[in-house]
Length: 465
Image 1 (cartoon, helix red, strand yellow):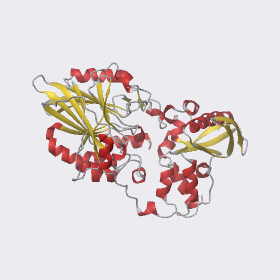
Image 2 (tube, helix red, strand yellow; image 1 turned 45 degrees about the horizontal axis):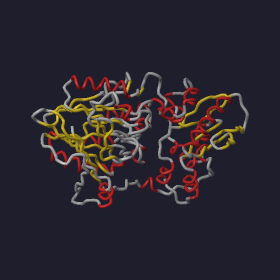
Image 3 (cartoon, helix red, strand yellow; image 1 turned 135 degrees about the vertical axis):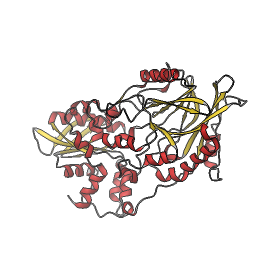
Image 4 (cartoon, one colour; image 1 turned 90 degrees about the vertical axis):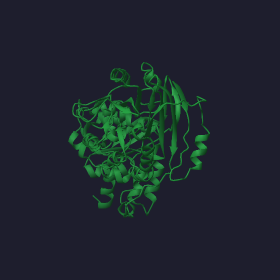
């Protein structure tokens, strides 16, 4: 098989974007000089749309329609996750409404990303139910979701059988508090070997892996993952927001769509009709003009003056809202939070830029020693990510990433701590100590119905709770 990386400079609405063209031309590379002829299968792919519904409807959907008209039964459109989180409008609906847009535009296959679990397990199940295409996740182990997810599908396109395999990010049960046994995403290597074998036995002429991870990270390097599965022809990645028009990884070809709908991957699989085998892969990125997402009048409305100020404000609001003794929260940027607090004309939309993640606020009961262990690990975690630790009900003294001491406002035998559900679950495996301490302590019903951090802040600040 010849691998050919051909950047596709296509016109959308009669307009070629010069900025994108210059960027893509700078990395143009061709691995074959002569284009082979034969049947073609065309795959369009998006990833990391992050709730950009306006961009999808105005830019991506028309392009998908155009490609479908051009290529007919040889064409398929797929999405590789992190689809529903990232805009205020979608967040207020806990992710609902985005996936039906994709399906209406012709999206047949979808692999969930890590942010799909941000709103809780029940919301995740609702997302699976509202997508009327096929959800792929070979490494998802869940007795309650098994009827909603498939490990792979075989689609006949252009007279050839193409197997599409889905892989989610591993250890996703560490991103939200979920009862043991309800949900787990396993490591990819054994699952991929098993699924590739099944696809080949089912008569697949080519194998495409849709994986919500980039080339690196996700606890599984792509080279390592593919080492024992050289039968994978094409990998379409996601998650890292690093667009890739085409590159060789092991014996496979790799592409990754740009984030937020700023482009669509187009992959062309060329077959030798005489020998009925895949002979060539061409890939490229079709650039799209980025549109701003609209804000509602309510989200743009100016908020009244906030009574609670200072960088510890998020934790103070958490403590007040939940009635807890203590509160702990890692703020992504102290500078952004400071500017927000100083802004006398701030809106909900402005607040969302500082608190873009849903981050449900839950409470747990802990001893003073357990609080110390949790704060120690959380402090090191936040320092590594250059985040600011907001506290309420206690003060911390640190030296770099190391916690030196905690001073409680009031000494108790036990404390109720308000913390984000993401941190309590282990932050995707980055806070294993916290996950271990809180195992068996979390009220799962509370976590599923808990308000997000932004809602907590606005409730306290606007209503003076």
